[in-house]
Length: 501
Image (tube, rainbow, N blue to C red; front, side, top):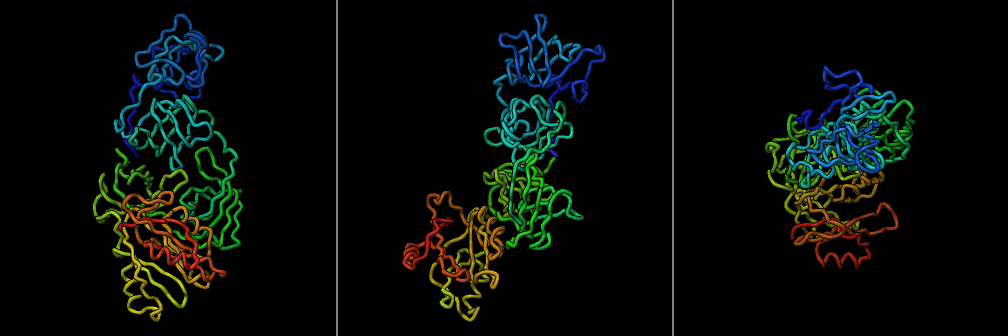
């Protein structure tokens, strides 16, 4: 994993006694049995001045006129990380001989990149509910996302506990955590809180034997226990099968399943998201490539299960890569496969243009950028039913387009395309009439129905037929095709992708 940068005792002074429920650490051999030393965050202070009752790392600390306060490393206050030396009292409190500031209130975090996002320190604050969100650890802002591994073998996370953080700093110095491990000073591990969650998606992975264990559904970890209700009425559980999962999130964000039901959705074991981008940042240290990457401004979580293909070149900062994976609710992308590319947006087997065809027999439009398909249709495939309309648009960009087919009699003899990974995943899981065929070509995604300056908007039209087997969509880039389709009474679903003029 990451190269761990452990602060010296003079910097963070990580020293505990077992009597406080923490892991014993460095202790002076000359210390009496009642002398203690520990480090943690200040949670409460006397109402006025420094003399009086404190709460530090969950412990009651008494400061009197003889207590020495060392603020050389910063200002003391609630949220500061301090080292306490003192004497254990009969009531369990500590009479402080010295309180030394390690990280003061308002101390700026280290500049981005100083430690590659890996460090050890005390938790100063946690999100108001749950563990997903923004933490403060040793004066640094840490973002915990859905793919962050949270290890609490030594107890539950709490303010004042010492943790080891692994992650990647963004441009603002915020650490996007790939892993946080509790070292000492935690509370008893909290039990899962009731929080109803329901997801629909395809099974990506199952336990090596049986069904009890950790599943992967729509890119998320789902824990199935002996108490989980398994309903296979719509088909046996297998990779690629669409399921509906009901359950609750535990404190780490893992979904504990109460019920898993197979669904008749079309499903696909392939990820719903595929995009192209430049590698802006990689994990550092001994972890190699495992951890959080920054690709084209997107955060990508790479695990030991991620397939890395370097046939076109090595993985380095500045390399162009193609990423396929699953988009998480917080925007993190859980990577299934990463391939180096020689040209951004280039996809094998895809031509420079998407060509539109029309079948007068079906009254349907069809678009493809596959050079093989274009050649076959031009040569008279399917009895010559498909003819060019003259409409084309350039392909290439950062986002790959999902392609679905109705595959009669299961669905309509028609194709559906989307560059929105959320919509792609939704169609996979919810609509059995549409079979996912893969990623068709690359485009630039629209943002809130708008295209970046200099790009052409692609409108998607829906024919809104009276019977489902007649469903068809058309994608237009010219004003002529737009006006023609409006005159036919089709519904404009808006701008769904953008292309080069």
